[in-house]
Amino acid sequence: MHCLNGRDTLIDVVLWLLAFATVSISIGLMYRGWVRGQRLDQRLISCDESLLSDDGFRVTRMVVLPAGTMVIPDAQPVVYSPINQ
Image 1 (cartoon, rainbow, N blue to C red):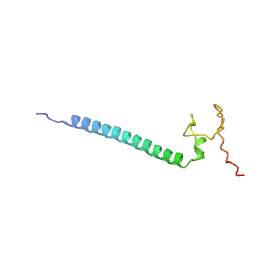
Image 2: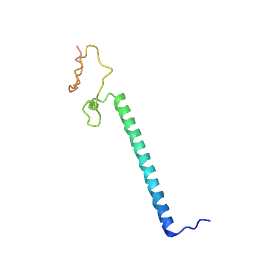
Image 3: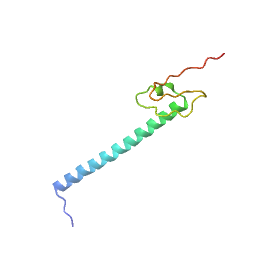
Image 4: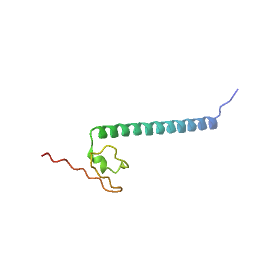
């Protein structure tokens, strides 16, 4: 039979608090990543032009561009609205 003394109980409480904090932080980071992904999806769906200059994102590849578009590496992206004639 195991006899608990005050020291063992304190260590158990500290370890449980540490485990709870670790799990809470992990869940919080996963939730934050999920929310950020959802926001990015919405911004991409709505063709948000501010993504090109947003500090939180780095544009490394453009896959859908109008015909005749010239891509220059390391250039600042500029979005022009077509002129209707």
